[in-house]
Length: 386
Ligand SMILES: Cc1ncc(COP(=O)(O)O)c(C=O)c1O
Image 1 (cartoon, rainbow, N blue to C red):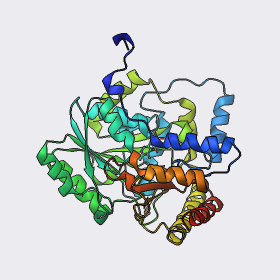
Image 2: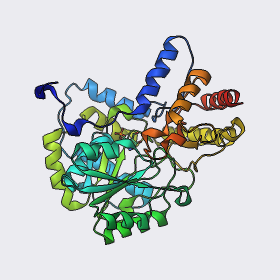
Image 3: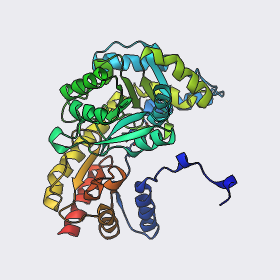
């Protein structure tokens, strides 16, 4: 290919394998098969009714204008109120920035916090775009493996050991986590943040699965340090994936730099989505009912999977994922997922997307759909493995 047509080196990020599973599932469905979908990490439920009604009203009013780059003021205030109501934490709305999902927040945060070639620690297993976005922006992701003995929480010791090898500029963790579904306790998060800050390592907390905590209450890093940068989203608890709206709580000195970046990169976040997001906060009852559905789904899988033959999985503390070790059956979870899809018609995601080291041993099951589908999945897997 001539130089004129070559894509840049930094755009050469790996694809998302889950997309391949989705395409294979679509082919089976086109041929008349019925698939139980457990591969996609998104709620089956639509946005709360109050959010939809607010969006309808806004559309009828005609004009949908740009908003301020930091987001609609009343939405930023509503998000601050959410911290008061849900975490008993007072936050200055001036520190809250509305973003294009948490995905948009990662780009803004990384650009504002890091220089090209800075090293930023992320955990493995972990959400792949963390490392791929860092790479695309010229930073170096440093993969630190987490282990089941710490509930897959990154420890201060592991972070500082990596830092001693080659200095780190930042660290990003998520709790509840994707793909493991595990959570960090208050003590673990507090210890990690203080270890990071003592070594001058900037701390980013991905809290997109907050609200979906079952084992114990999720703790926000915003409560633990004014220096931590918190990222959250309306995609999961609020069931608004396609609306592409999220937020950040940022240390005060980063507000203006991020505002300038947002002005230049996006101007503002889609206005209709911001209006709907603000109204979503009034849809608690609906969202709590959906959460109760996940609690039931989690119970069905935790009780049903061992009987079906899937005996080893990590503690399903939060989010809507169960991460199962399938090494009793195979050392190639991609092949396992493919056969399970073709023969049992259950779609799930091979761990290799999330973990280049041991992902071939694991499969991620998402339980964000109906209880009937969960029961069907358990029955199909039991027949298939039996
Ligand atoms: C851990 C985690 N962070 C961030 C995202 C991105 O979500 P969004 O950009 O929709 O907010 C996802 C999506 O699945 C995720 O699992």
